[in-house]
Image (cartoon, rainbow, N blue to C red; front, side):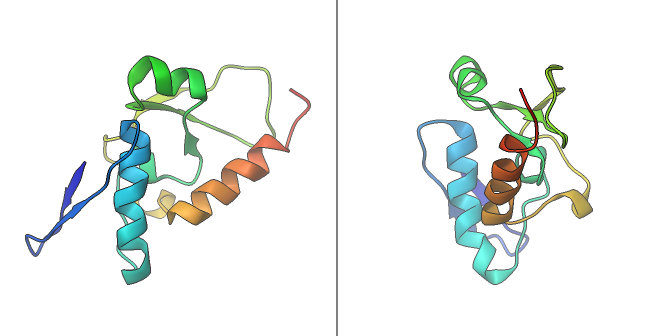
Length: 105
């Protein structure tokens, strides 16, 4: 996966699926403070293993705390997002861990 910066520089990320490849590219950008403004970089967006397999990581769930039994909405990880919703990869992983422990599901 490639992210083309405004300067024309290309940052590449590899992975076993599209979400992992996007995360790898984002990890290269995180130290410089550059954020990718797409759904896959939102704090509360994360795919389940089954969704990753079914969509090659192209789609992910929009999660809410507290965790419930309701099926969350699904989004395309490459669609644009609100800039205030995106974060670093580490922040996204930390939020997902918090979400996993937030409910009795």
